[in-house]
Structure formats: structure tokens, C-alpha cells
Image 1 (cartoon, rainbow, N blue to C red):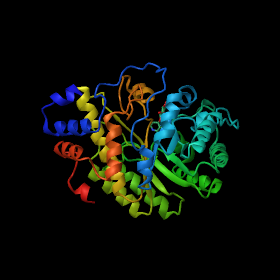
Image 2 (cartoon, helix red, strand yellow; image 1 turned 90 degrees about the horizontal axis):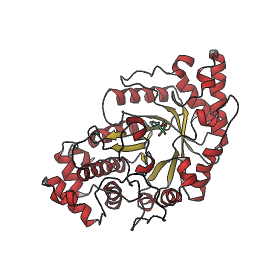
Image 3 (cartoon, rainbow, N blue to C red; image 1 turned 135 degrees about the vertical axis):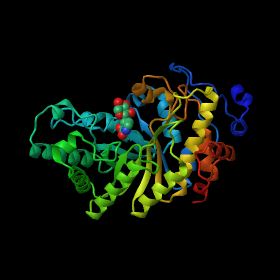
Image 4 (tube, rainbow, N blue to C red; image 1 turned 60 degrees about the horizontal axis):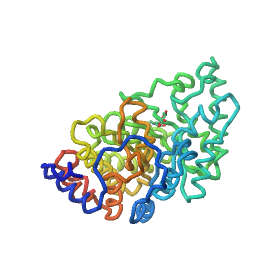
Length: 388
Ligand code: XIL
């Protein structure tokens, strides 16, 4: 916090004032992973889930099943703060069907059971993706008809297994590439473009009550990728494919956060098609930035709050889900090779500025004033976004 107080920038100073007034314990970088032996303290005040509930919003986190199994503090905070979970990996193809026709649900069942006993909804993730596919499938030299039967069986079995507990599914994940074309993936090559329609139709047959989502990254704001996603889901609706919503993953970092006005505009055009939108995998990497960690965490807090505010501004935005909740188990260091602090609790489960910024945005339904000033000064915020 000392770094915060010394900071000369006006926006930062205001953020620091806000953070101080919220009694943030520390702006220091997340400490290295060390298994805390004691039971961690829960944040004082209303929980995020209670605050979100008042808006009719689901607030969630991706769940790492090993942590759920082995770290009681993880379970304690997860059930306390969130009312929605997404299995981070446990429902993916290679986990649920590691051998052909051999289904293993033990890991995902643990998450679903935890959710049930803590009054949480489950976002099923995911049914069709080009990653996390088992070798028996990708190296099996199957014919088109066989692959069709394999995918049909997989979707039917997984969705039916969870028909009573999982009423939201990411059916197709990351089907569009960074240029806005259908991704040249295992499934596109195997079945052609109609794999997307088929996947939604098969999921709907297995559980007609479930809300079915197309989920992707990099299409949160406005641009060629979000245009491609918009055009894809519009064409699905025209073909009467049973799709209910679009998931905006929101894996971002301090230097590439989308403008909140663009996120709101994108959400609104999807909503105008009759679809829900959900923020499904948010994290904000801070590693690639030269400012002191206190300034980075304050900027991160502003981005979290502004994206939550975008969601609260659009009635059809029904969930705000983070890709984890503690820096202790974030996937980001795995993919970048650098330690990072992208989530809202640090590695020792202490709430970070981003946690308090989310709580504050939920309490007031608007952006905390200091955060608004800071991000508008940084050019991230188009002033019209707040009035929409
Ligand atoms: C990631 C998990 O976090 C990692 O543990 C795993 O090794 C790879 O997948 N988009 C998605 C998620 O839809 O499923 C990905 O999860 C992150 C990017």
C-alpha cells in the first residue's frame, strides 16, 4: 500500500484512496505459493454471491478438481463467495471419455456434488473443442460416419449424465479462429462446418431444458472476431439451431482489455438476436507490465469492475464467471511460463483490490468513482458506455 500512497498520478491516487477506504490489507505482489496450514479468514462484509444475487446475476469461478480435493481453504472460499462453478477441465472430452466408449465422471461429479451442496449452478464446459481431445480419437483414423457417431454418442452421454444438475452448456468452444474464419480444427476437418449445428441439436435432444452456448475468446468487444461470432450465431438462429447464448471468455491482460463501451455494444447486438450473454472465463494477466505491482493490481481492479459493470448494464448478461479465483491455481503461468497474478484472491487467499472493486460495483450497481476516473483517463472507457 505504501507504493500506492507514493504514486503521483491522480487517477492512481484516487484508486488508492478508494482501496484504503475499503480497508485493503496490502497492495503487495502475490506471495509465492506456500500451503497455508491455518484456515484462511473469509472477507468481511457481504459475499460476492449475495451481492450478485440482488442483481439476479450468477457469479462464478472455474474449479480445479485437485484443489477442491486437497485444499480445504479453496473449498471454503469457493462455496462462500460464488453461486456458480465451471469445471476447469473435468468435463472436457479427454477427461470424460479417455477411452472410446469408456466414460469417467468421477472428477466432474465431485464438482457437481460440491455445487449442489452449496446451492451453486454449474456451467458445463465443454462438449466440442479442438483441444483436450484424447489420442484414441485424434489418432484413430476414423471415417466421417464413425466420427459423427462418436461425437453424437459423446454429447448424448455427457449431457444426459448431468441432465438433472447441469442446465447450461458450452456446446462449441472456440470454433472461430483469430482471423474470423471457422477454425481449421479436428472437428471441422472431420465433419465439415455442420458439426456446429449438429452439436447444438444433439445437446438439445439430450437435455431440452439446458441453455446452450457458443463460447469463445477475443470476441468480447467489437472487431472482426466478434463480427464473425455474431454472424455465426445469427446464422445458427436462422437455421433454427437451438442456441441460447454466447459466452465471452475474457482472458485478457492489462494492455489489451477491450473498451467497456465496445463490450456493451457487442452484448447488446447479441441480446437483440434474442440471446443471453455471459462472461465465462475472465482473468486479467498483469505480468507483462513495468509499473509497480501495486499500480498493476489497481489497474486490474479497474478492468474487473468495468467488465462487471458492462455485464450489469445489459439485462441479458446473466453470469460473470472467472477462470479460477485464487492466483494459487491460475492456468496463466502454465501457458506464459511466467508467474502472474490474474485473479481476485492472491496465492494465500487474501482478497486483492480486484475483489473489493467487484464487491463495490455490485453494491452500487455502478463503477466506483476512483476506478471510473482512472480508466476513463487511460482511454479504456468511452463515456457513452456508462449511460447505456
Ligand atoms: C484451460 C485450463 O485452464 C488448463 O488447465 C488446461 O490445461 C487447458 O485449458 N479457453 C477455454 C478453457 O475454454 O477450457 C481453457 O482452460 C482456457 C482457454
